[in-house]
Amino acid sequence: MENKHPIQLVLALFIFIANPFQHQSIQAQKKPNVIIMMTDDQGYGDIGMHGNPYLETPNIEAIAKQGIEMETFITYPNCSASRAALLTGRYPYRTGVTAVTQVDHFMNTSEVTIAEILSKNGYRTGIFGKWHLGDNNPMRPTDQGFQEALVHKGGGIGQAAGPAGNTYFNPILEHNNVSKKYSGYCDDIFTNATLDFISKKDEKPFFAYLATNLPHFPLQVPDKRAEPYRKMGLHEDNALTYGMIDNVDDNVGRVLTKIKQLGIEENTIVIFLSDNGPRQRRTKNDVYPGRWVANLRGTKTSVYDAGIRVPFFVKWPKHFEKNIKTKTMGTIIDVFPTILDITNIQAPDTLQIDGKSLLPTWKDNNASNLDDRKFITQMHYGPTPFKYMHFAVRTQTHKLISPHDFPHGILYQPKDDELQKVLANLELYNVEEDPSERINLALKNPKIVENLLAEYENWFDEVTQERDAKGIQRIYLGETTTPEVNLSRFDWGGPRVLSKNELGFWRVKTEAGVYNISMDLPEITSNGMAHIKYQNVHKTLPIKKGQKQIVFKAISLPSGIGNFQAYFKTGRLATGPLFVDVKRVDLD
Image (cartoon, rainbow, N blue to C red):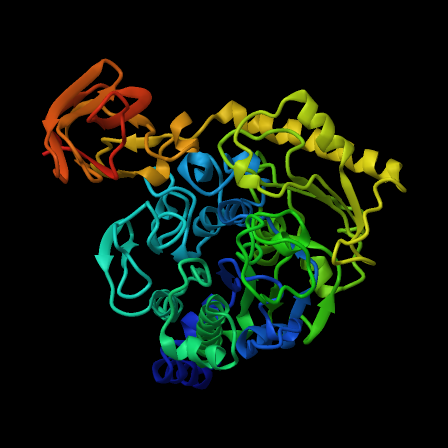
């Protein structure tokens, strides 16, 4: 061949020298790039094209115009559950996730994420923004398949996960598990890191997960973003929220522009969605005046549709038609199997995936693989799921609901008389004809109620059995790869956590070794004693009024599992520290 066509060989060599990136571009075409952009507490009504009279979101909507909008896309009503479902394709109860703080958001390290599977199949994987599935080894993004990670701790910047005093401006973030202070506004920082990640030139396709923490509380945004909405006369909370969404929209535009500039737009699938509905109302006294919710009922933490129906747009040029709308119900657990379907990657045979691929629907709106499906969601507080409390079973046409006005107050096992009342007051809606969930059809359709209730009962028994068998994921202390661990109130458990969050303990797995343990203290009003307890180890040191920190040096801890306790007493009732730094010092 070489002897017969020397001119062609010379020409090919010349083209390669003139354009050295062409070869790697061809290699990258073998599998598509994947970008998922997920916002935080952006409701279905927080999109201009969904009738919002104040907000314009042209860049987000461009994804829909260039591709597909799923008008009925259902998630979980809280942050961690939706994120666990997105990354694993499994119901959150299976993964260990029930809610958003203390141990409730810990995803079991045995879970297989989409990042792990893609990474093992030649992808570069990166997360930028919010993780919210555990801050310590072995639950961090880098423990679950992400090769590059720039994230904040906990459920939001400024929360108890720390560091103390962190804000959306010039925040301290975790870059590949190392704390670092950044300059700028958080959403811009996360987007800049995403752009750098997708711009890296190599032969590998990439998976970029831009999980901004906007527009989640606290409502912090540059004034230039909020000012136009203030001039409209909107409530300050709405002005700030819409300013944050405006910032998100600009950064979505930057991502879309970058993939076009890089010449990879046609081989990149882009997904935009939110994790749950808007933080408009948790109780009757927590309301954004005038928040536009597209006539949907409920809020974040609610299983009514405003809490779980979110915007969802996807585009993949030359593979999907443009400006398509489908009413077929998609769900958060479907993203995982859909990406595997698109990339032609097989999941491990032992992995039970609850979701279904959306690809047939995206290619043909008349596809039937999602007919007659049921999606079940439940929301409460605390690590123990309680049967029948605040759940919904949603089909394409109907929805069975066990409502609750304050799901954060579901802390203990209800008594039988309360459960009888709950089951007697189940609600049923035809969500196709009545999307605002106004007309309760439960009394007129008892057979539908009983059928959907049976679906829920079977689901609950199955997923909680798997969860209980695994137990709550433990934090690892003393491993050579992670000799120093920072424990916060955000990650502790115990009965007093459910009251005023002033005392808890950490479920840990330890390596035998020598540790220095420091406690950051809240305001100390009188002299007392600080305590460290773990297995058969119990150490004390005196503390004085006004003291801010106490350090226990050279403490020998045994290997094993248990509850690590750190607390102080200035009276008879113990109180916990703000942070505990546990550092193994015998590894050198």
